[in-house]
Length: 315
Image (tube, rainbow, N blue to C red; front, top):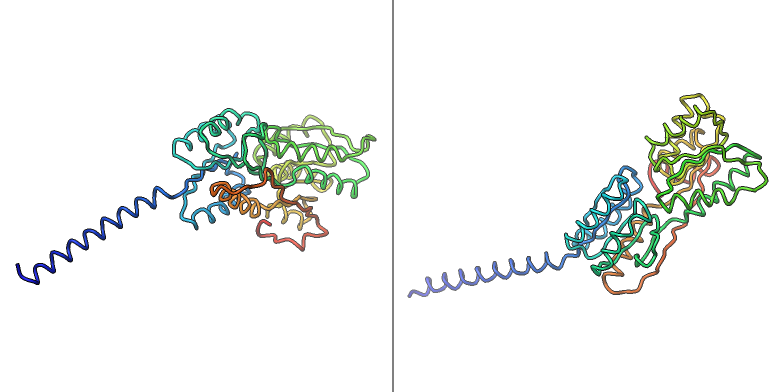
C-alpha cells in the first residue's frame, strides 16, 4: 500500500472518530440540559409575560429549557398541564396557581414525583407543597390604597372588584378592607368577582351600576380590572367623580394616572419577581438552600409621584 493511500485511510478514520465523538457529546449535552416547567394562571395579563421573559432569559442563557403553559384561568386545565409537564421530564415546576386551593391535587403528584415547586405571585393552600414562594407584598398593596383613600376622601361608597380564587388578590382586598376605619364613613356597597380580567370587570361593574350602586370609590384587585371599571364608569359619565384604585403598576395604569383618569395603582415589579424566581430555581437545582418565602416590596403610584416612574414599561 502506498504511503499516500495509507495517509488517506488514517485521515478518514480520524475524521469518522471525531464526528462520532462530537455526536456523542452532543447527545450527552441534550440529556444534561435542565428542563423547567412553568404555568401561570393566564398569559392574557402582560404581568405574567414579563415574569416569564425574565425567567427565560436566565434559563436559556445557561443552555437549559423552559416549557411555559397557559391554562387561561382554568384550574382543571392547569392541573392537566402540570401532569403533562411531569411526563416531559421537568426538573422543577414554577407555578402561579389559578385557584390556590384546587391546585393541591396536582401539586401533590409533583411532590410525589420528587420534583420541587416554586410558587410565584400567589400562594398555595398547603405551603409544604412549595420549596419557595415568591410574592409581592399583596396585603401591603391593599393597605397603601386604603391609606391613600383616607388621605384624599373623608368618606365614601366603595365597590370591590375581586378574584377570590387567587390568594394574592384576596390579600390585596383584605389589606384594603382591614385598613379602613370601622366607624362607617367608608361603606362597601357592592362587590363582584371579575377574575382580574378587563373584559369581565367592565360588565361586572356595569351590572352593579344598573342595580343602583352609586360608588365614590372602586378598589380593583389589579390594573386590568381597574381599566374595565374605568370603561364602565366612562360609559355612564361617572368616571370624573369616582376614585379608582388598582394594583400592578402597568404602563396603561400609569398613563391613566398621568392623565388624571385613575387615582392610584400599587406598583409591583415583574422584573424583580422573574429574576428572583430564576435565582431560586438554580439554587434549588444545585442543592443550595433557599428561603421559604421571598416578599418583593411594592410602591404606591399617584399623580403626585408619577414623574418618578417610567410610563412606558414596568418597574
